[in-house]
Image (tube, rainbow, N blue to C red):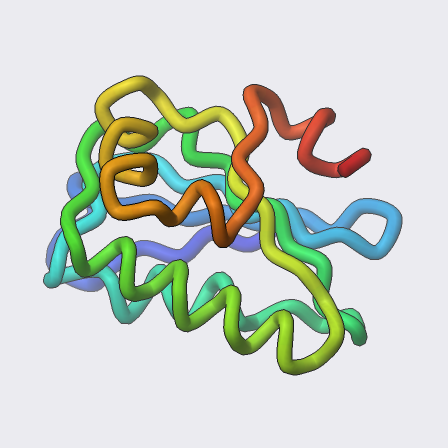
Length: 120
């Protein structure tokens, strides 16, 4: 497991990942905004497996703005371009509302749990 924290802002965002059965589960906790979206995007694109199969566990995310949306779109495009996929799991209602409002849930499958996202 790897833990990534934005230097100088460890209270704002924490990202951990673990690889299981060829799927990278990226667990995100905290707030996703313009100050940390680059770190998030890099973590989502860092899958070692080809094709990349990534589940973003957002159950610990309390806030996300358009910067987070852009990070997810970039990660989705990178995964799709490499014949892989990106799925979102566990988004809380305020974050899920943002995903739905901009239509990201139509582009990236959203699942209630990590287990459901991993199984497709």
